[in-house]
Image 1 (cartoon, protein in one colour):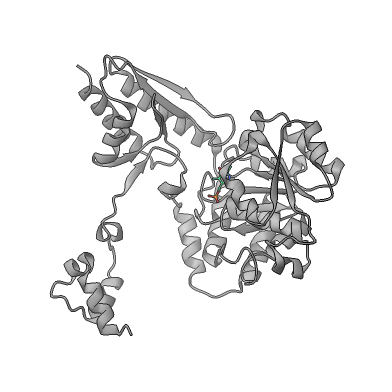
Image 2 (cartoon, rainbow, N blue to C red):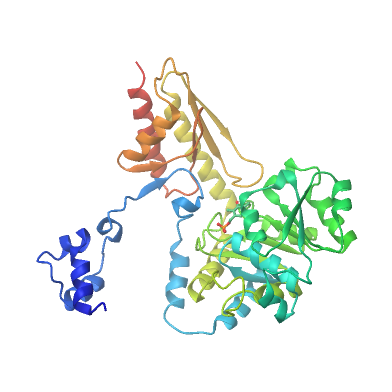
Length: 405
Ligand SMILES: *Cc1c(COP(=O)(O)O)cnc(C)c1O
């Protein structure tokens, strides 16, 4: 059995604690005092390097940075008990009012919303079916998706036991439709890649009497996307909480018809015998998500856009001062719709690969994360703190200048 003494001894044998409490044996009071000390540099204690995020909203880079207002809401929620279903009811109602939709709930991210929304469509309010999923005996079991909309996140839908049926044309969709068809799923970021666009997709769903679900995970900005697709007629829509909305990365929004949101909730905690039990969001994330949404809706989006443009321009101007370097400023039309910079160069004049530049940025001081392939380094500034664009510009210029000669 692990006694307190042996636990503390084993902790003390770890480099971290051994270093902090030299002498090996750690008194309980010391551990408590350490835990209570203010201004602890946890990341440093743990040997973690922080970085400037010039890449964007990536799960692996821990999403976005929580604004103070969101942290305050989460801290507030941490100080009292409320019932989990009650806070979900009230916050869901408030989100639905803010976004002018029938109903809403906070999920553990957009992927979680895909699972819960699909499960709700399959079960309706039938509690026996809730328990039975992912065994779909006696239930509908197919979800139709355009082949060009395929993404890895469809796994979240397959979790429910359904089969994904891929189609390309409207004719193929109508032919694929049968008594097993439960849902028509749309990935908004791929709107322009498919033969069937969002409006037509919704119309087909209504004609066939099958609910439509739009995955808009990375699709704010623009802010109006938060209500556009419900108003277009989609029955369910999801957004990530930890991307453009800057809420908790472990949260997201599921918006939709009242009956479908109620059914999705049957699969979510606190209920235990459900497919969604592992997708818990507690009061802190639920309230944090609401605070983030309110803050986002109240923001001056035009002003923020101007800031991003000027930051991107500054970095672009700096790196172009290096002979042979070229830049392209662009805005992806859908998903991560923000000013973005691609930096490339003549390799005869600047003798370094984009991958080596990204490594040098990562390994320098401060560490900077960027994206890109074999031909360019990619930058966005929307996940940075103001001022960091100057550091990124300076480091990029240094690295590119060093490789020139
Ligand atoms: C990011 C993303 C997801 C997953 O969102 P989480 O909030 O991280 O669960 C799902 N679909 C698309 C299209 C995404 O971009």
